[in-house]
Image (cartoon, rainbow, N blue to C red):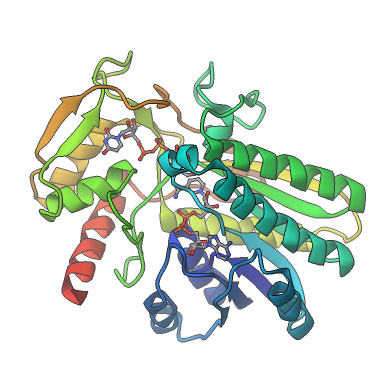
Length: 339
Ligand code: NAD
Ligand code: WQD
């Protein structure tokens, strides 16, 4: 029995592979290294003492994907593989629709043909847009995301729901809020590619002197201090939720339609300024910043009601914002040591 982890050398995927291996699963990774590097595989092996199978190819290559299913008994999939740069998705919509949806459909074609179930999908709180009520639970109405990236997530969910219903399969849609941090060993973390879009990687690089100062996109939001509020969840806690969601699906009887949906967050909102101050306290560094105009497409506030995951997965986020941000700084120092 093996679990296919697509995008398994990426940020969240690599942390999930570690948790899967630590829980006794065999893991087969397919990753085209479009947003990750091969040294992550070696570091996963150092952390776990185990060696996942790794195939470096693009999931859009159906013929290569077929060979993986021929060579391994795949009993489930966690599908992390996608392009995720929100701004880039507006400039390259067709690349994003092709990559994120064709990859997904190619895997589902194999699942359909081989009668395989247990599919976990990396979704995002972006499918809620600016929700009307906080905290956000799974019954909150979805809104058409503004970004092409967000639309690929919502379309991915719809494709999987139709797949589960038509072929009586078990799926779990995991809507991540804002993942942050790195592994406690500082051997894996989020690899910065170009100028970071996300807050925490940018804060990390500002602290390291890679960036001169942090631009805070807007302080005129109706929030505690005028800066936007998000739910920042530690990546290892998030990875553990994937193992719990997979075990839940695998324990259920086969040949039945199961459509699980979980909001994965801490249940607590933190403003941009609160994150900056927490990073400074946690790591005894200073983050120079300037207040700028709002960023196009940003919402004011989003934080999760994660009660359903706690109830059904026996999972909850356990790591504080400051402790998560400490791992971010250790990861930056590890990256600096490699250069
Ligand atoms: P990431 O870019 O670090 O990981 C994605 C991995 O998929 C990369 O290693 C990349 O090389 C690989 N990949 C992409 N397209 C591929 C293809 N066609 N074939 C093979 N490999 C391919 O991103 P992440 O932050 O780890 O996110 C993982 C998933 O979670 C993504 O689907 C993302 O949309 C989703 N998500 C991320 C966040 C976040 O803030 N990081 C939030 C919500 C949802
Ligand atoms: C958080 C807050 C920014 C950078 C995005 C995607 C979402 C998911 C997570 C993939 C916002 C502010 C940021 C900076 C800033 N990705 N900020 N200066 O926008 O909540 O979500 O990443 O699935 O789909 O939309 O996260 O980290 O980009 O921003 O002031 O340099 O930090 O305006 O208020 P976001 P983020």
